[in-house]
Image (cartoon, rainbow, N blue to C red; front, side):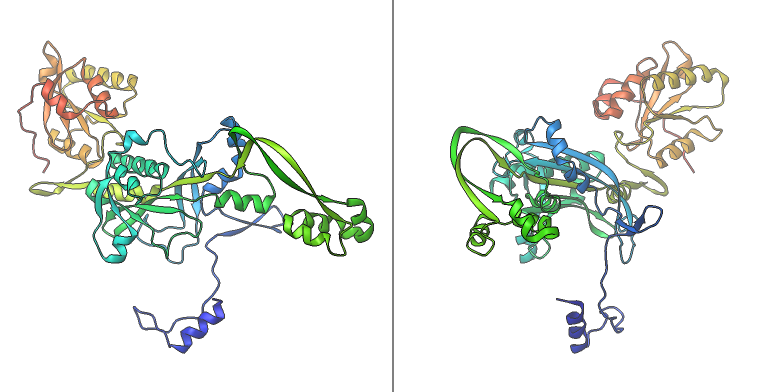
Length: 468
């Protein structure tokens, strides 16, 4: 439908704005890509990229060579993208410049099994299928293995990446109950996609798409091939050689040159793009002396295939917004005491060092602890300000530091020890001074849980001071 036809329909039915009841403007053409001028003269027109993926497709042949010509393989890229949004809003949710991280997994279109699928097939996930959306039903929980087996998810490779997306989001702090995978309905599915799912996170703005995961078939490579004429194919070795009939288009360049002169090159390029049936039609026309078809047989040991692409696409800003909102908490019974419960594995600072007071005897222990943590590559913060220990605990909680090491008067005694506090539960244990750095390192990397620390070390019963 053209913009004039759309405008005629708007006027025919006197359509108004559904919110303000104001008159609607005439339809106008709108480009979601930002245009710019390239070079000192500005005569060359360019566009800011709306996604990072196309850079991977352009380099497909080189990437295939890096993988020794074998399928499957994948390439990942992270960078800024730009879209000319009509109405930016909702903080980081809808913006004109944003960070994307995309993976392009190239595979045989007829072999979409994944060798690691068995490792993740029992992952429970929440699926909101297109059928359930049409029928007004609620999302359903099942394992990714069941979803692929029943055909809800198109293939193992797509299912594998969906499960890995789910694991990534829950690992960084997205809550299981606030995460679902919604299938694209027919009226929103890209025409070239075999299947497409969005990982959506629940926020105060509702369910927000944070990651897309689509089976894009071979559409992108085909489009680049048609535009550039470069063969973007992979070779697949056949189980046994086979003989095939080959038809080859032959152009008589000498005759074309004499007949069409300066237009010969353009006509030659046009004839080269003709199919066999079209060439056979040309052979019967007045141009029969300029083109012909040569038929022969050829023994094939490999066949050329255009790979299909499975594409997970991460919106980093949206993930970050959902993460911060879902992990913002207040202490029970004290609404003024807020904290972020980011998992230790992604917290910017892993622990804090807090001397109980300004006693100079604590200084050597604080310095030694800081040096040990630095050596173990653990980001940390020393807070030796004059505030009460409870107030300093509250400050570290506000910036999501998961663990706090307190140097107190018991530290000065033999054997030296410190208290280790966990942010979310506020529980503390007494840990030997020489062991605490390694304990924090294991906790921060996810190799150890706080529950295991509680079982090994004695609980420190003293109640922390109020932060008020």
